[in-house]
Image (cartoon, rainbow, N blue to C red; front, side, top):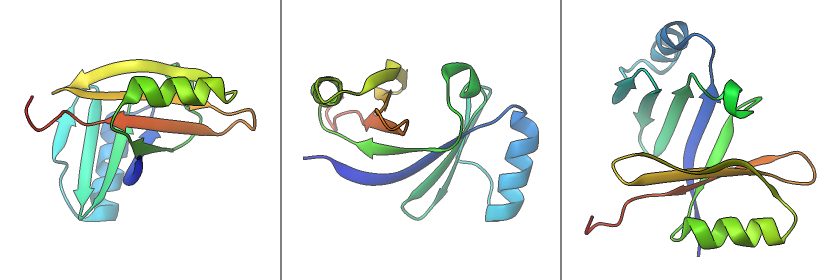
Length: 118
């Protein structure tokens, strides 16, 4: 069973400007500060900034669903009529993400965290 995990990723064109803005808005420093992703954690909420999001077709923020089996869940969504927006991608540390676009044009993100034994 999938569960919602509150991870919201914003595509940004200028990572430094966006990092400064969100840092001021949230009143914290990022827990992840890399050229490819900046992430802030506030309790159970994660806000991410992706400087490559626009080039991958992101037009706005994407909420990611935490799933146990990203391949099986992706296939179920494709079978239901969705199209791949972003193929399954290992983003480091065993974390894998993917995204689909529904027939209505909504983007749904999928996220599979590494297993505790990895």
